[in-house]
Image 1 (cartoon, rainbow, N blue to C red):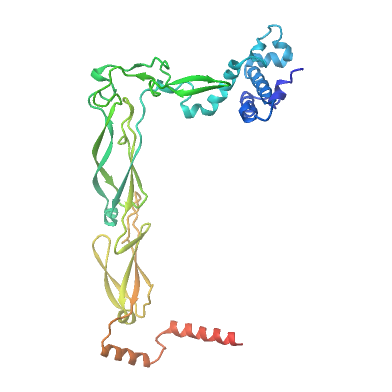
Image 2 (cartoon, helix red, strand yellow; image 1 turned 90 degrees about the vertical axis):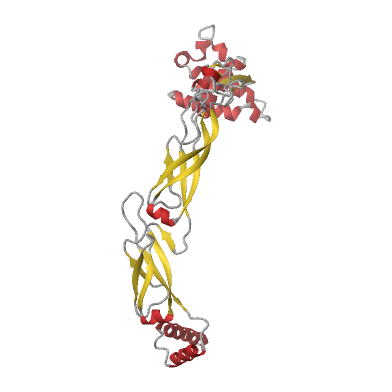
Length: 381
């Protein structure tokens, strides 16, 4: 049975680039793998056929020879074509598929060359949640926090080795941090079990850190919280995270701010809102009230005559500072007209007398009930 054209096998044109050839083979390898085609007796043969095509087309010299002479280029010892033939064995497939395996998983597993050669490992970043008051967010503050973390071992200076000795290259993986094993058609790459991927072993581990190069410890740090922070603000302290393994650089510490709710003020960005109760008489007659400000001061606000619940008045520049911009928000006073309770007999008598004088003093009520009457009349019609 004549061999099919290699380009036809992979479903590509003759002008395909190296990347396009690899991509096409990768797709075919996934599509035709025998483990995924148990009900297709031809899958294994097609799989090996794709492997043979890729073995030739991925190699620049073999590809050039194939483009010129076709399959005849690898017959009678002209190019070692039997290495990639249908019966070429698992070794050739392992070589071809290894390229695709590394392409798919190389970054995740550290690449073909990485592994334990980079012996020093960066420490993890840490997160610390810090809750502060609105007053502290307004003025900013210097705060000391205690952070449980890993620090470089003092006994071995972070090397993990006792008495100043140096780690040695792992004999199992030769410093790569990974070992490869062939399983059928696959070449599987795993973390070296001897050195746990570090590429080195320590013959005489440090007694304090047991070879890790770091120990657990609580650290006290002074943190500068700038004015204007709000819930969700993140502050980064470079190098204050977990210590690296065997002398590697430390990670970073991220402080996440949470501003606690306030009893008097509600915050919206740089603006503050303060809901102030006023008596019915004060709202009707008008007058002055004294309100607090976030800086601990006081401001006098004039209530206009006839004010209703929900009316707002602005105090410019009395809000929160904008983080790192120098601007300041405003404070809004929102009136809440309070209905009197527990009236005395005299107070009730005066209110009844006031109510008997007419409804012209309540324009909202008059307008509302007039609309209600029109609605009911229309329903009757």
